[in-house]
Amino acid sequence: MQMNNFLKDYRVRLLSIALFSILTAMGLLFSVYLFMDSVSPYTYIVASLFLVLTLISGFFNITTSYWYYRSYFYDDYLAKIKKTLKPVRRFPSVAIAMPVFNEDPAIVEKNMLRMREMSYPKSRLKYYLLDDSTDAAIASELRRFCTANNVVYLHRTERKGFKAGALNNMLKHSNEEFVAIFDYDEYLTDPNFIMDTLPYFGDKRMSYVQTEKSYSKGTLFSDSINLFDAFFFRFIQPARALNNTAIFSGSCGIIKRSALDVIGGFPEYIIEDTFFSFESDMNEYKSLYLPKIYALGKPIKKFSELAKQQWRYNYGDTQFLKYFVSSSKGGDRKTLSRTSTIDYISHGFGLNYISGILLLFTIASILIVFSSFPIAHLSLSSILITKNINLQLEILGFSVFFISLIMPIMLTKVYFNSAKRGLMVFIINFALSFVRTKAGISAFLNLSPKLKWARPKGGQKWDIIHAIKNSTLEIIFAAMLLILGASALIVDNFFGGIWLLWYGVLYSSTFYFFYKYG
Image (cartoon, rainbow, N blue to C red; front, top):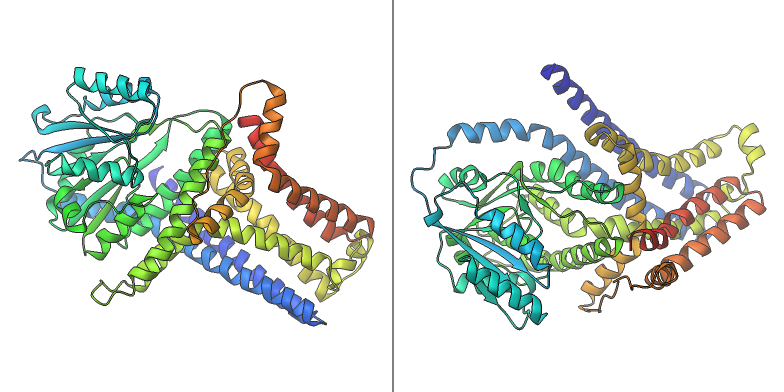
């Protein structure tokens, strides 16, 4: 049975790689078709835009295929490392750090108490609550809790450097040999975290060990959001770990203090973990990803909470992209391999790709539909009775979007046994396109806009107002697409009309998610 599952998994990965490759090839063929039928400077510009977008998409499809395929071999790689591990004979001191910012004290206290149950000599553990709360009542309650439970309470009145600033402040007040970090909402499910991760530091160049992060079970919506992390930790992290570019993910990980001192602490950016991972690599340290869950986070139940998270991620990733380009030019810096360079560029550009490129593809689609390309003159009857190379290429282009829908559904069905969550992930990516794109632009321009996505109290009326207010741009864009799609159908442009109507429905989902999930 185990061998059958092994072969099935391998075949599914090969099938997925084939589909990613086909998707790229079809996009390129459709670009060729656009050039073949270009008759004016306008159509050549449109064809060129589509080709550039297709090449960018192809780069990410190929990179995704590479990660997906490489992750298959990680278990064997990790098994070889485990054979060389030696049991822990000396118990180094470990700091357990939990950063918080105006969080529910009940959740913080519950999870901190659970951390006290780590399977490790108690005398070698020290607990730190890093409180940046601006709410006086919350800060007072957390201070009381820490005093009563022998937890070091460190409070800052100014949140300089965000989470990284809080961690760096802790480094000034601690001297433990290792630092283990957990988010306030993560409940420890396996107390062997420290005993399992410490043996890997037998390698003197090991900087950190990151374990798999996941959320507790919730609704279809929250479980679908969990897939964002699941795809990253199941496929991307293992493949990157083979290249020594596994990302420290901010929590559920443990870091050697001496490495932190050499690196200079945590870079004070909004996503300090990615910057720290890069600096660790540039200082020629090693890192490791351990695909095991030791703690479960609180599920994300509100769309506004997801929007804020994705804004922060893409703002930080765009900052990192700029940082990576400037840092790589340093004369005395480590020279990265081509594979590592691709890993870091892909990471920094990733959310920009699945947001900004989606929007540009949509705009290119509008330009194609309302142009002199033959696709603008294809009625349903002509599709059924005409047979020529142009028609076949047009159908090929239309199929690209169909396959892009099938891919996440197929993968989630095979690996997570839920086609519904795959469809939800596909739609959520469109719902977040403007949010992520605006975050990327803000980071590029060094802007720090205030985010106000909290849902007001007051019943259904206020829910609708809240949804409209927070998705105004998406509503206008979706309405435009629906009008243009209907217009195309009226003039008997079947493919173009369906194409734009489909996009309109996808972008209108932002309003739906804000309304339904707050």
